[in-house]
Image 1 (cartoon, helix red, strand yellow):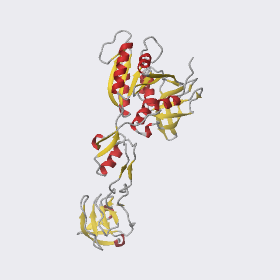
Image 2 (cartoon, helix red, strand yellow):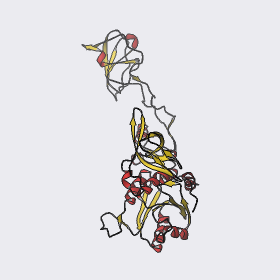
Image 3 (cartoon, one colour):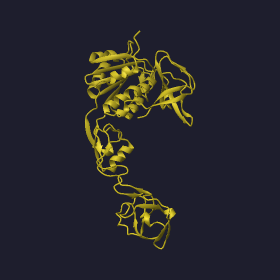
Image 4 (cartoon, one colour):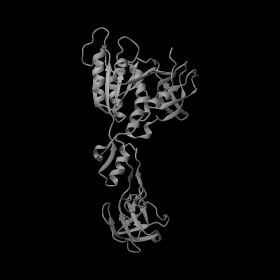
Length: 396
């Protein structure tokens, strides 16, 4: 019996010599989810001038404690005049603080009458003033290379008036589903056949991880067909992902077809689910062969495909999933394989609780429906209810 290998050693082999792809410049409006290939420096101060944090009155703090003439009205987007000594200005949220003013008092504390305002004397210098550059200073780092451009990052770019950025090209992925028993949804099932649940599931996960799906094919249990489609995939994609066909059965043709076209390393991993894993190359394309069981595909995508896509995208934060410790509301015992259990996390005042799906079999895809983490139970471990367990948070 082959010796079981660790998940860490498989990841090391998978990511060896992986480099980010080419750089392309795209419009920021089309950059959501993409990864910066170059650091961006701020061009502007944000905010560009001192402004009011609320509706109220701008004044010199030294003039408080008396009635002051209201000398001007300042709305956001309009340049103010200098504030004359002994006066105040009606100002609205976002309005620029006029030269000569140093404080804003909220309107609820002011009595206004006949173009004058009574300002109480218990106000603090600088109250309710948002200073120029409080958020961003010009000529300072804005976003680092490797940043994934989600909502806040896109807002940062827009706030600087930036319309184009350099990003890494998305990895091109070919997804091949093997097996005569696999039938596409919408087709009638014959005895012994099942619908292809792995393709839509992996397609969605790969897209979440930043990939571009360039090929999605079903591969019949035939050596010549498998070889032809693998060759086509290697010409179109950076990464080929297969499901099924990497075991030692007579109808498992991916292994032999890959060996005829390139190189293969078949791993037997000390993990459950997902014991078999195929890693290989055909030309410049990398191949990751996942088991056919849907839960094994789901777990394998998070454990292997996510960090691979992250490396190809130049995104360091995708190298590992966020980890947290939780209290288990279940018990289990492992033997020679590390167990990745699908759990739902509950955040309570007493801490995080991990609720495991009752049936953890690798064919039970419903165990992944509400899973927001994988509870990792090491090899040769007894985990009792109430014990601490490390969880991998399933997040982009």
